[in-house]
Image (cartoon, rainbow, N blue to C red; front, top):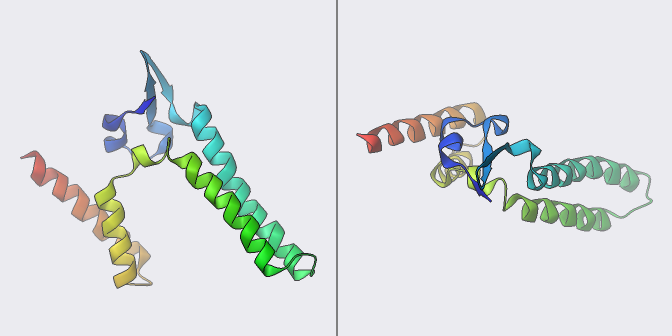
Length: 127
C-alpha cells in the first residue's frame, strides 16, 4: 500500500487523502491502518485523563501513569508509520519545529510563516 502523494500535496485534510492499493482507491480514514492509528491516538488521550484521575485519588502513582501513557503513545506512533508519515512534508515539519522553539508562544504566527515558506518555496521550485 502506498499513499498517494498528489492528493496529499493538494490537501491537508485526511478525509481528502486516499490510499492506492492495486487499482482501487480507498479514502484514507477507511483503511485498517488509519483506523488502528486513530483508535490508539484517541485511546492515549482519553487514558491520560482517566489515569490522571487515578493519580489524584492516589490509586496510581504519577510514575506508573507516565509509563502506561508512554506505552499507548508509542503504540500510536508505530501505527502512524504506515499512515501519517506518508502525508507529512518533512521540510514543513522541520520549519514548524524550529519556529516553535525559536518563537515560543506565537503558534498562529509560526503556522502562518511555515505555510508561507512551504507554499512559496514549492511555487519557486516549480518554475
